[in-house]
Length: 153
Image 1 (tube, rainbow, N blue to C red):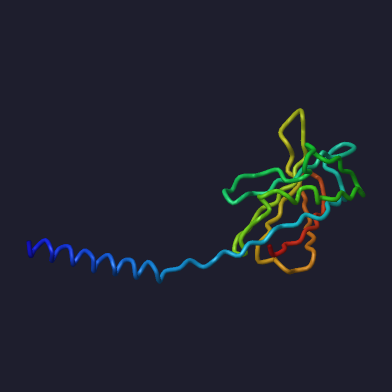
Image 2 (image 1 turned 180 degrees about the vertical axis):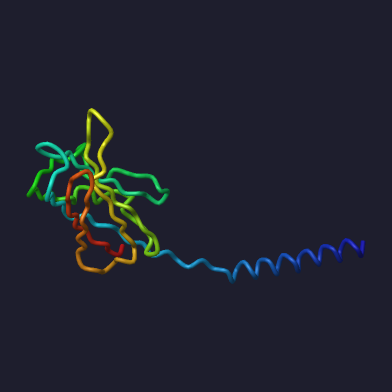
């Protein structure tokens, strides 16, 4: 009986040590920010008379998620066109930690072949609090500027 008590007491001391250790290790809270899409400007379309543009953003799992235009399949774009992108701002893929990054990729919808990549840019959570950012997107002959902000939430 004395051996059982000794083993039980040793187990309790061991568990108390583990619990004490676990209690001291606390994860740092993650501070979240949100990419706020503002506008897209076309300087040169990639094909014919216009592009059928849409924007995808990588989510926390690395999946490309369409975020703009919100309810439409695409927005028609041509030289000099400036489109508001605010209808895409409700998408959860635009939320990230301050130590994380997301890739924004602009695409041209093509019905007869694969969609053309019009350019991409990396946005980091550490950009929070900065002024409006303007990034050039170039691909498949198209030239665009995307305007966005990264804001604390």
